[in-house]
Image (cartoon, rainbow, N blue to C red):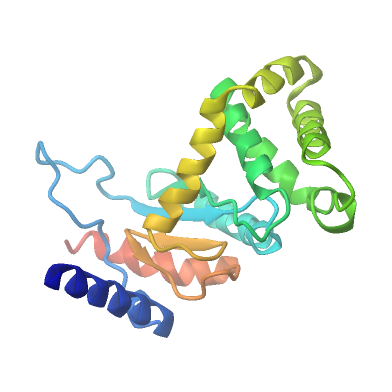
Length: 222
């Protein structure tokens, strides 16, 4: 009982620190932890973790500056991983995220193509566009849209994916993983394991440079 109270206090303290911006004011130049075998898998890289929602306008606005920053530094300097967080208050976020999980299994090289297509056509998937549609019709719309992006021959495989409960499970895991990390909005970014301030808002290219440049300089000092 005492341990649970103590743990709850620590969680609340961390949450308060994050909201106030204190926790995110410091980002280490390397990810913490002892790596078995002596060498980190990402030695010399800055790791960016992005939690995005495919039908979130702020996620959409955050993507191009982040991609520009990644391309500027290159994969030898920056390691970028995107996690999906289908927020319950974004219309059809779960179905769109499930489509991305399905496509990632079918052809991982097409995952970001579909993500960008969702970003570019978000108005088709929320608000008035789907207000009078049943869930089955929404799923059909998203399956057809995904097949148009990947190629019409992929439609049957995408439909099979939606009939597979494993893709539903994978999408739920994405949401739960975000919750476990304390993610409560999209976009939400971690750099070398530490959350950045301004959750729910896009960062500009210049702001990404301000985050990454000092870490690249400091890498040689560790």
